[in-house]
Image (cartoon, rainbow over all chains, first blue to last red):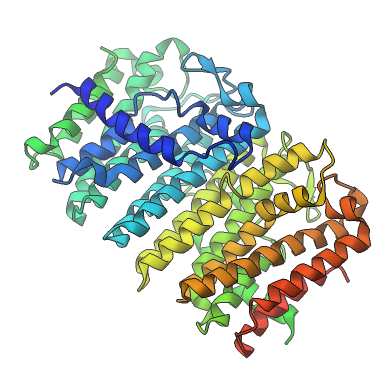
Length: 281
Length: 281
């Protein structure tokens, strides 16, 4: 299968939904509406939404079953980028070749736009869930996403990441940051997609291990792509380039084993995992 | 009834639950755990949780039915204070006689602690909802809270509030900010409590009008208490002290009329409304 075509098609699906749910100027202050859209359109690869769709398909459901979750994980991802870029955090002026939100709209609006994107993620998922046949599953996916966005995962990982920029760390500590800062949201995308598609607990546990391994490997690949930056919180720094690549491959292998008992319908999910980990080549 | 005793007892109920759900140091980076607790304990009056409990009681349910929601609205309220105090927003060094979170823990951790409190609110509500007999109602309360926390309400109100500090506004525009920045979360507390207690749509609509009117009147009273600050976004500024107090009383009267067909069991909710609006006397 053509993974780029899959990413493009599923990207269009989630983009259409994001267009509908992002507030229009008029319903909210215009600067806020624009700041919320700034990093959503144009966006990145839409990898997390694609994983949510592919996980639903892997357990035999149509991708649309995961539509609200796909939008929600992209909104959480975008909120985290907006806040990470702030002057008090990574202090980045540019992202994807454009000014960051605080450069374009000021720091106060950037903080608030991030806050609003986070709240919108839960609003979208709860609204869709209220119309679903199975509200328990919507609540489960929502709780999982909230946990992935919270202190024990994304936020805690970012706090440790900020600290590690000053103190070099060993590989285990770096992977613990990757697991919380990157992999938890990737795992929530996969688990949430499968959950909304009706997967049972045993399947969800395997999907979680798959998502976590792919997520850590994805972050290692990010660091390989960014190797000139030489952050102290990078496996490239701790293990060298070859060591980091070997670790990412081992994680990918381990992740794919979790999908062994799924047939052809899991092929998009497998291909996305390979793409996420090998996109530096 | 003794409204102070009610606030104290229901405050203890929600505090016990908040203690359980706030992350312990060890499960998250210690500075983050402390920063998240900093404004929760010791907290304020716990008015929003009390309103959630009283709304559940007003429609005939035990207060415990609203426990997770009561904690969630307090977490959202606290997150909004942490972010509002930031240097790029209101730049406040002190709150309730103590250093604000960014003064005590630095700006990056303050932004992240606020983010984590917001995510935790939804995690708590979704976790509780998954154990409830009625997950549809948990999703409804959750969607309502997300909307109250988002761009069309709390965040949008804060964006407009920051802008109005520079441009004086008329009474209608000021009330529109109060409605979004303060009253939406108060209304979500009341509506959510009643929703989880099993109220029907007509009752929820009356509870919403009650909560919105009480919320705007509450904010006017805040401004009367802070009148020395002379913010441009204050009805005291626009209508004078007597005009503002008359408007608050009119809103309270209108709010209480929404509870006319509820008997004695709505008395705590009525008393909380009177307390919220008249606490300056």
